[in-house]
Image (cartoon, rainbow, N blue to C red; front, side, top):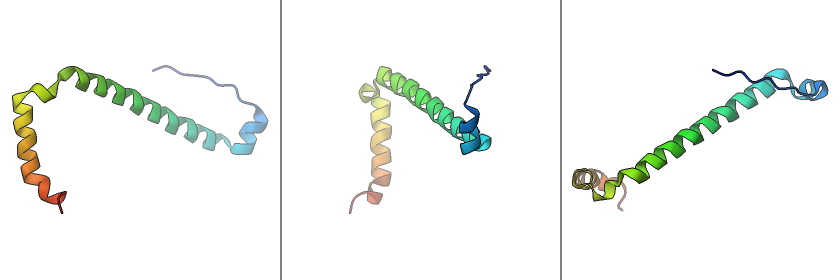
Length: 73
């Protein structure tokens, strides 16, 4: 794990509060990590060409037949 050190203006920290800044940074870094993971997954999916896979098509059709009543009116 890598540790980052940030220098913030003391008045800024006093205005917002240390905990609020820390929580904000943690949340946004988690979102950034999630985005990076999603990009990796998307890249892998684009390479896999599932639309040409017969087993995938069969599984997809079976799943649709089982669940379509939830989506069709």
